[in-house]
Amino acid sequence: MLDWNDPLAKPALKTSNVEPTIVEQTLNRSVADESKKPELKVALSKTAPVNPDDKRVINGQTDINQLAPFKYPWAWNFFLNANKNHWTPLDINMAQDVTDYRHKLTLEEKHVYENVLSYLTTSDILAMRNIGLAVMEKMSAPELQIYQARQVYEEALHTWTYQHCIETIGLDQGEIYNRYRVVPEIHQKISVANRRLSSVMRSDIDLRDPDELHNFVISYMFFAAIFEGCWFYNGFSPIFALQRRGLMKGTAEQLQYIMRDEVMHAAFGIRVVKQIIQEENLTLDKKAIRHMWDEAYEAEKAYTSYILKDPILGYSAETHIGQFQYIANRRANQLGLSEEPFPGAESTLPWLDEQANMRKEKNFFETRVTEYQTGGALIWE
Image (cartoon, rainbow, N blue to C red):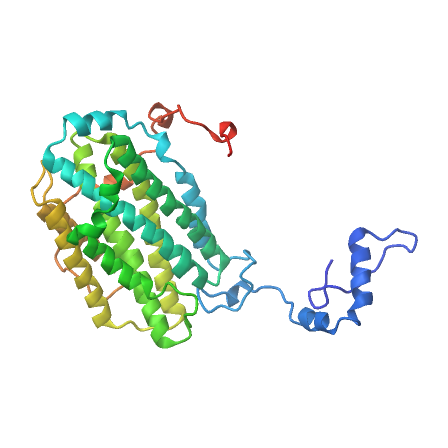
Protein backbone atom coordinates (compact mmCIF):
# COMPACT_ATOMS: atom_id res chain seq x y z
CA MET A 1 0.00 0.00 0.00
CA LEU A 2 1.20 3.51 -0.78
CA ASP A 3 2.31 5.72 2.07
CA TRP A 4 0.46 9.03 1.64
CA ASN A 5 3.36 10.85 3.38
CA ASP A 6 5.92 9.34 1.02
CA PRO A 7 4.10 7.88 -2.00
CA LEU A 8 7.34 6.98 -3.79
CA ALA A 9 8.78 5.04 -0.89
CA LYS A 10 9.97 1.58 -1.92
CA PRO A 11 7.56 -1.07 -0.58
CA ALA A 12 9.11 -4.09 1.10
CA LEU A 13 9.23 -7.19 -1.14
CA LYS A 14 7.84 -10.43 0.20
CA THR A 15 10.87 -12.47 -0.86
CA SER A 16 14.18 -11.56 -2.42
CA ASN A 17 13.54 -14.04 -5.24
CA VAL A 18 10.34 -12.39 -6.48
CA GLU A 19 10.71 -10.42 -9.69
CA PRO A 20 9.69 -6.77 -9.06
CA THR A 21 6.42 -5.76 -10.66
CA ILE A 22 6.15 -2.96 -13.22
CA VAL A 23 4.82 -0.65 -10.51
CA GLU A 24 7.67 -1.57 -8.15
CA GLN A 25 10.26 -1.08 -10.88
CA THR A 26 8.80 2.37 -11.60
CA LEU A 27 8.89 3.26 -7.91
CA ASN A 28 12.48 2.09 -7.63
CA ARG A 29 13.52 4.27 -10.57
CA SER A 30 11.65 7.23 -9.11
CA VAL A 31 13.38 6.90 -5.75
CA ALA A 32 16.76 6.49 -7.43
CA ASP A 33 16.19 9.57 -9.54
CA GLU A 34 14.74 11.68 -6.74
CA SER A 35 18.08 13.06 -5.63
CA LYS A 36 18.73 14.23 -9.18
CA LYS A 37 15.43 16.13 -9.37
CA PRO A 38 15.10 18.55 -6.45
CA GLU A 39 11.98 20.08 -8.01
CA LEU A 40 10.29 16.67 -7.74
CA LYS A 41 11.00 16.64 -3.99
CA VAL A 42 9.23 19.99 -3.66
CA ALA A 43 6.21 18.77 -5.61
CA LEU A 44 5.98 15.54 -3.64
CA SER A 45 6.23 17.36 -0.34
CA LYS A 46 2.94 19.12 -1.20
CA THR A 47 1.06 15.91 -2.08
CA ALA A 48 -1.66 15.10 0.42
CA PRO A 49 -5.01 13.36 0.33
CA VAL A 50 -8.06 15.54 -0.28
CA ASN A 51 -10.19 16.12 2.80
CA PRO A 52 -13.78 16.73 1.67
CA ASP A 53 -14.31 19.09 4.61
CA ASP A 54 -11.80 21.44 2.95
CA LYS A 55 -13.86 21.74 -0.23
CA ARG A 56 -15.74 24.96 -0.98
CA VAL A 57 -18.14 26.02 -3.71
CA ILE A 58 -15.81 28.89 -4.65
CA ASN A 59 -12.37 29.96 -3.47
CA GLY A 60 -11.52 26.36 -2.55
CA GLN A 61 -7.94 25.09 -2.38
CA THR A 62 -8.52 21.36 -2.82
CA ASP A 63 -7.72 19.43 -5.99
CA ILE A 64 -10.36 20.40 -8.56
CA ASN A 65 -9.60 17.21 -10.50
CA GLN A 66 -10.50 14.83 -7.67
CA LEU A 67 -14.20 14.09 -7.70
CA ALA A 68 -14.59 12.08 -4.50
CA PRO A 69 -14.88 12.05 -1.55
CA PHE A 70 -17.90 14.32 -2.01
CA LYS A 71 -18.63 17.31 0.15
CA TYR A 72 -21.72 18.11 -1.90
CA PRO A 73 -23.37 14.75 -2.66
CA TRP A 74 -26.55 16.62 -3.58
CA ALA A 75 -24.71 18.08 -6.60
CA TRP A 76 -23.79 14.59 -7.79
CA ASN A 77 -27.41 13.52 -7.36
CA PHE A 78 -28.47 16.42 -9.60
CA PHE A 79 -26.16 15.02 -12.29
CA LEU A 80 -27.51 11.47 -11.91
CA ASN A 81 -31.13 12.67 -12.05
CA ALA A 82 -30.46 14.90 -15.05
CA ASN A 83 -29.38 11.87 -17.04
CA LYS A 84 -32.75 10.23 -16.40
CA ASN A 85 -34.40 12.94 -18.50
CA HIS A 86 -32.40 12.17 -21.63
CA TRP A 87 -34.15 12.91 -24.92
CA THR A 88 -33.74 14.68 -28.25
CA PRO A 89 -36.26 16.77 -30.22
CA LEU A 90 -36.34 14.06 -32.87
CA ASP A 91 -38.11 11.77 -30.39
CA ILE A 92 -41.35 13.77 -30.59
CA ASN A 93 -43.81 13.52 -33.47
CA MET A 94 -44.45 17.03 -34.83
CA ALA A 95 -46.69 16.12 -37.78
CA GLN A 96 -49.94 17.28 -36.14
CA ASP A 97 -48.34 20.60 -35.18
CA VAL A 98 -47.79 21.43 -38.84
CA THR A 99 -51.50 20.91 -39.53
CA ASP A 100 -52.50 22.84 -36.40
CA TYR A 101 -50.34 25.83 -37.28
CA ARG A 102 -51.47 26.01 -40.90
CA HIS A 103 -55.18 25.30 -40.46
CA LYS A 104 -56.28 25.68 -36.82
CA LEU A 105 -54.38 28.48 -35.07
CA THR A 106 -55.81 31.99 -35.15
CA LEU A 107 -53.59 34.93 -36.09
CA GLU A 108 -53.36 35.82 -32.38
CA GLU A 109 -52.29 32.27 -31.50
CA LYS A 110 -49.67 32.25 -34.25
CA HIS A 111 -48.34 35.54 -32.91
CA VAL A 112 -47.96 34.02 -29.44
CA TYR A 113 -46.39 30.79 -30.72
CA GLU A 114 -43.82 32.49 -32.94
CA ASN A 115 -42.71 35.07 -30.40
CA VAL A 116 -42.41 32.60 -27.54
CA LEU A 117 -40.04 30.52 -29.69
CA SER A 118 -38.18 33.64 -30.79
CA TYR A 119 -37.51 34.64 -27.18
CA LEU A 120 -36.71 31.15 -25.89
CA THR A 121 -34.14 30.22 -28.53
CA THR A 122 -32.08 33.35 -27.90
CA SER A 123 -32.36 32.95 -24.13
CA ASP A 124 -31.14 29.37 -24.05
CA ILE A 125 -28.02 30.28 -26.03
CA LEU A 126 -27.37 32.99 -23.46
CA ALA A 127 -27.95 30.47 -20.65
CA MET A 128 -25.48 28.04 -22.22
CA ARG A 129 -22.79 30.72 -22.44
CA ASN A 130 -23.41 31.95 -18.90
CA ILE A 131 -22.97 28.53 -17.30
CA GLY A 132 -20.01 27.59 -19.49
CA LEU A 133 -18.14 30.90 -19.35
CA ALA A 134 -19.24 32.68 -16.19
CA VAL A 135 -20.27 30.14 -13.58
CA MET A 136 -18.75 26.71 -14.15
CA GLU A 137 -15.11 27.83 -14.08
CA LYS A 138 -15.66 29.66 -10.76
CA MET A 139 -16.68 26.44 -9.02
CA SER A 140 -13.87 24.81 -7.03
CA ALA A 141 -15.60 21.48 -6.33
CA PRO A 142 -15.75 19.08 -9.29
CA GLU A 143 -19.10 17.55 -8.33
CA LEU A 144 -20.61 20.98 -8.99
CA GLN A 145 -18.81 21.39 -12.29
CA ILE A 146 -19.93 18.00 -13.55
CA TYR A 147 -23.62 18.84 -13.19
CA GLN A 148 -23.02 22.22 -14.78
CA ALA A 149 -21.28 20.52 -17.71
CA ARG A 150 -24.48 18.54 -18.19
CA GLN A 151 -26.43 21.79 -17.90
CA VAL A 152 -24.39 23.35 -20.72
CA TYR A 153 -25.29 20.37 -22.90
CA GLU A 154 -28.96 20.67 -21.97
CA GLU A 155 -29.08 24.36 -22.89
CA ALA A 156 -27.62 23.47 -26.30
CA LEU A 157 -30.21 20.69 -26.61
CA HIS A 158 -32.99 23.16 -25.83
CA THR A 159 -31.73 25.52 -28.52
CA TRP A 160 -31.77 22.62 -30.99
CA THR A 161 -35.34 21.86 -29.92
CA TYR A 162 -36.60 25.37 -30.64
CA GLN A 163 -34.79 25.36 -33.98
CA HIS A 164 -36.34 21.97 -34.78
CA CYS A 165 -39.83 23.33 -34.04
CA ILE A 166 -39.23 26.46 -36.13
CA GLU A 167 -37.88 24.44 -39.04
CA THR A 168 -40.59 21.76 -38.85
CA ILE A 169 -43.44 24.26 -38.84
CA GLY A 170 -41.81 26.00 -41.81
CA LEU A 171 -41.30 29.43 -40.25
CA ASP A 172 -38.89 31.96 -41.72
CA GLN A 173 -35.82 31.26 -39.60
CA GLY A 174 -34.07 34.53 -40.41
CA GLU A 175 -37.14 36.53 -39.42
CA ILE A 176 -37.87 34.54 -36.24
CA TYR A 177 -34.30 34.57 -34.99
CA ASN A 178 -33.96 38.31 -35.59
CA ARG A 179 -37.06 39.30 -33.64
CA TYR A 180 -35.09 39.69 -30.43
CA ARG A 181 -33.06 42.35 -32.23
CA VAL A 182 -35.96 44.28 -33.76
CA VAL A 183 -38.87 43.77 -31.36
CA PRO A 184 -38.23 46.16 -28.44
CA GLU A 185 -40.17 44.11 -25.87
CA ILE A 186 -38.21 40.92 -26.62
CA HIS A 187 -34.95 42.83 -26.90
CA GLN A 188 -35.50 44.39 -23.48
CA LYS A 189 -35.63 41.03 -21.69
CA ILE A 190 -32.52 39.78 -23.49
CA SER A 191 -30.71 43.06 -22.78
CA VAL A 192 -31.47 42.89 -19.06
CA ALA A 193 -30.11 39.34 -18.92
CA ASN A 194 -27.07 40.21 -21.02
CA ARG A 195 -26.16 43.14 -18.80
CA ARG A 196 -26.61 41.28 -15.54
CA LEU A 197 -24.73 38.21 -16.70
CA SER A 198 -21.99 39.73 -18.85
CA SER A 199 -20.38 41.44 -15.87
CA VAL A 200 -19.25 38.03 -14.57
CA MET A 201 -18.43 36.47 -17.96
CA ARG A 202 -14.72 36.88 -17.51
CA SER A 203 -12.04 34.68 -16.04
CA ASP A 204 -10.11 37.32 -14.08
CA ILE A 205 -12.74 37.90 -11.39
CA ASP A 206 -11.27 37.74 -7.89
CA LEU A 207 -14.03 36.26 -5.77
CA ARG A 208 -12.03 37.03 -2.65
CA ASP A 209 -12.82 40.68 -3.31
CA PRO A 210 -16.06 41.49 -1.41
CA ASP A 211 -17.50 43.65 -4.19
CA GLU A 212 -16.74 41.10 -6.91
CA LEU A 213 -18.17 38.31 -4.74
CA HIS A 214 -21.38 40.24 -4.09
CA ASN A 215 -21.78 41.01 -7.80
CA PHE A 216 -21.20 37.35 -8.70
CA VAL A 217 -23.78 36.07 -6.21
CA ILE A 218 -26.42 38.62 -7.29
CA SER A 219 -25.75 37.71 -10.93
CA TYR A 220 -26.04 33.97 -10.25
CA MET A 221 -29.16 34.59 -8.15
CA PHE A 222 -30.73 36.45 -11.07
CA PHE A 223 -29.78 33.64 -13.44
CA ALA A 224 -31.12 30.80 -11.28
CA ALA A 225 -34.18 32.40 -9.66
CA ILE A 226 -35.40 34.78 -12.37
CA PHE A 227 -33.91 33.94 -15.76
CA GLU A 228 -34.45 30.18 -15.40
CA GLY A 229 -36.74 30.00 -12.39
CA CYS A 230 -39.31 32.59 -13.54
CA TRP A 231 -38.82 33.68 -17.14
CA PHE A 232 -38.29 30.15 -18.48
CA TYR A 233 -40.68 28.41 -16.11
CA ASN A 234 -43.46 30.88 -16.88
CA GLY A 235 -42.38 31.35 -20.49
CA PHE A 236 -43.66 27.96 -21.65
CA SER A 237 -47.15 28.62 -20.31
CA PRO A 238 -48.74 30.10 -23.47
CA ILE A 239 -47.77 26.97 -25.44
CA PHE A 240 -49.12 24.75 -22.67
CA ALA A 241 -52.39 26.72 -22.86
CA LEU A 242 -52.64 25.70 -26.52
CA GLN A 243 -51.82 22.10 -25.61
CA ARG A 244 -54.68 22.02 -23.09
CA ARG A 245 -57.02 22.75 -26.01
CA GLY A 246 -55.51 19.97 -28.13
CA LEU A 247 -53.29 22.29 -30.22
CA MET A 248 -49.53 22.20 -30.90
CA LYS A 249 -49.16 19.12 -28.72
CA GLY A 250 -45.81 18.12 -30.22
CA THR A 251 -44.22 21.46 -29.42
CA ALA A 252 -45.75 21.39 -25.95
CA GLU A 253 -44.33 17.93 -25.29
CA GLN A 254 -40.90 19.20 -26.34
CA LEU A 255 -41.29 22.03 -23.84
CA GLN A 256 -42.35 19.63 -21.11
CA TYR A 257 -39.00 17.88 -21.37
CA ILE A 258 -37.24 21.24 -21.39
CA MET A 259 -39.24 22.36 -18.37
CA ARG A 260 -38.07 19.34 -16.37
CA ASP A 261 -34.49 20.39 -17.12
CA GLU A 262 -35.12 24.02 -16.23
CA VAL A 263 -36.75 23.14 -12.91
CA MET A 264 -33.56 21.30 -11.99
CA HIS A 265 -31.36 24.14 -13.27
CA ALA A 266 -33.18 26.65 -11.09
CA ALA A 267 -33.16 24.40 -8.03
CA PHE A 268 -29.45 23.67 -8.43
CA GLY A 269 -28.52 27.33 -8.90
CA ILE A 270 -30.56 28.38 -5.87
CA ARG A 271 -28.87 25.66 -3.78
CA VAL A 272 -25.43 26.86 -4.91
CA VAL A 273 -26.24 30.50 -4.14
CA LYS A 274 -27.38 29.61 -0.63
CA GLN A 275 -24.25 27.50 -0.09
CA ILE A 276 -21.98 30.36 -1.18
CA ILE A 277 -23.78 32.81 1.12
CA GLN A 278 -23.28 30.41 4.01
CA GLU A 279 -19.64 29.53 3.31
CA GLU A 280 -18.56 33.09 2.59
CA ASN A 281 -20.63 34.57 5.45
CA LEU A 282 -22.08 36.97 2.92
CA THR A 283 -24.74 39.60 3.58
CA LEU A 284 -26.57 40.67 0.43
CA ASP A 285 -27.70 44.23 -0.26
CA LYS A 286 -31.50 44.25 0.06
CA LYS A 287 -31.76 47.24 -2.28
CA ALA A 288 -29.85 45.34 -4.97
CA ILE A 289 -32.23 42.39 -4.60
CA ARG A 290 -35.30 44.66 -4.73
CA HIS A 291 -33.97 46.32 -7.88
CA MET A 292 -33.37 42.88 -9.42
CA TRP A 293 -37.01 41.87 -8.91
CA ASP A 294 -38.38 45.23 -10.10
CA GLU A 295 -36.27 45.22 -13.26
CA ALA A 296 -37.26 41.64 -14.05
CA TYR A 297 -40.94 42.46 -13.52
CA GLU A 298 -40.89 45.51 -15.78
CA ALA A 299 -39.18 43.55 -18.55
CA GLU A 300 -41.66 40.68 -18.18
CA LYS A 301 -44.64 43.06 -18.19
CA ALA A 302 -43.50 44.72 -21.42
CA TYR A 303 -42.84 41.33 -23.05
CA THR A 304 -46.23 40.03 -21.93
CA SER A 305 -48.06 43.07 -23.29
CA TYR A 306 -46.49 42.38 -26.68
CA ILE A 307 -46.95 38.61 -27.06
CA LEU A 308 -50.47 38.77 -25.57
CA LYS A 309 -51.62 42.16 -26.85
CA ASP A 310 -54.70 40.21 -27.92
CA PRO A 311 -55.66 37.42 -25.51
CA ILE A 312 -56.08 33.88 -26.74
CA LEU A 313 -58.74 31.47 -25.54
CA GLY A 314 -57.97 30.54 -21.93
CA TYR A 315 -54.91 32.79 -21.60
CA SER A 316 -54.29 36.51 -21.23
CA ALA A 317 -51.60 39.04 -20.32
CA GLU A 318 -53.12 39.37 -16.83
CA THR A 319 -52.90 35.61 -16.36
CA HIS A 320 -49.29 35.51 -17.48
CA ILE A 321 -47.98 38.38 -15.36
CA GLY A 322 -49.95 37.21 -12.33
CA GLN A 323 -48.26 33.82 -12.53
CA PHE A 324 -44.86 35.50 -12.86
CA GLN A 325 -45.44 37.30 -9.55
CA TYR A 326 -46.55 34.09 -7.85
CA ILE A 327 -43.52 32.13 -9.11
CA ALA A 328 -41.19 35.00 -8.12
CA ASN A 329 -42.44 34.72 -4.52
CA ARG A 330 -41.80 30.98 -4.65
CA ARG A 331 -38.22 31.51 -5.78
CA ALA A 332 -37.64 34.13 -3.07
CA ASN A 333 -38.83 31.63 -0.46
CA GLN A 334 -36.54 28.95 -1.90
CA LEU A 335 -33.63 31.38 -1.60
CA GLY A 336 -34.50 32.01 2.03
CA LEU A 337 -34.99 35.74 1.46
CA SER A 338 -36.72 37.62 4.25
CA GLU A 339 -39.21 39.35 1.93
CA GLU A 340 -41.37 38.22 -0.95
CA PRO A 341 -41.12 40.53 -3.96
CA PHE A 342 -44.88 40.49 -4.62
CA PRO A 343 -46.73 39.92 -1.33
CA GLY A 344 -50.12 38.34 -1.71
CA ALA A 345 -49.65 37.17 -5.31
CA GLU A 346 -51.70 34.06 -6.04
CA SER A 347 -51.34 31.42 -8.71
CA THR A 348 -53.30 32.24 -11.86
CA LEU A 349 -52.30 28.97 -13.55
CA PRO A 350 -53.01 26.20 -11.02
CA TRP A 351 -52.37 23.63 -13.74
CA LEU A 352 -48.83 24.82 -14.59
CA ASP A 353 -46.97 22.59 -12.12
CA GLU A 354 -48.61 19.59 -13.74
CA GLN A 355 -46.61 20.31 -16.88
CA ALA A 356 -43.32 19.88 -15.00
CA ASN A 357 -44.58 16.58 -13.61
CA MET A 358 -45.09 14.96 -17.00
CA ARG A 359 -45.65 11.25 -16.52
CA LYS A 360 -42.79 9.22 -17.87
CA GLU A 361 -44.77 6.01 -17.34
CA LYS A 362 -46.55 6.42 -20.65
CA ASN A 363 -45.32 4.33 -23.56
CA PHE A 364 -42.79 6.86 -24.79
CA PHE A 365 -42.08 4.85 -27.92
CA GLU A 366 -45.65 5.31 -29.11
CA THR A 367 -45.01 9.04 -29.48
CA ARG A 368 -41.42 9.13 -30.66
CA VAL A 369 -40.28 9.44 -34.24
CA THR A 370 -38.19 6.48 -35.38
CA GLU A 371 -37.41 7.53 -38.94
CA TYR A 372 -34.07 9.12 -38.12
CA GLN A 373 -30.51 7.89 -37.94
CA THR A 374 -29.37 6.47 -34.64
CA GLY A 375 -25.75 6.56 -33.52
CA GLY A 376 -24.76 3.29 -35.17
CA ALA A 377 -26.13 4.37 -38.53
CA LEU A 378 -24.75 7.88 -38.68
CA ILE A 379 -22.55 8.82 -41.59
CA TRP A 380 -19.60 10.80 -40.27
CA GLU A 381 -18.27 13.29 -42.78
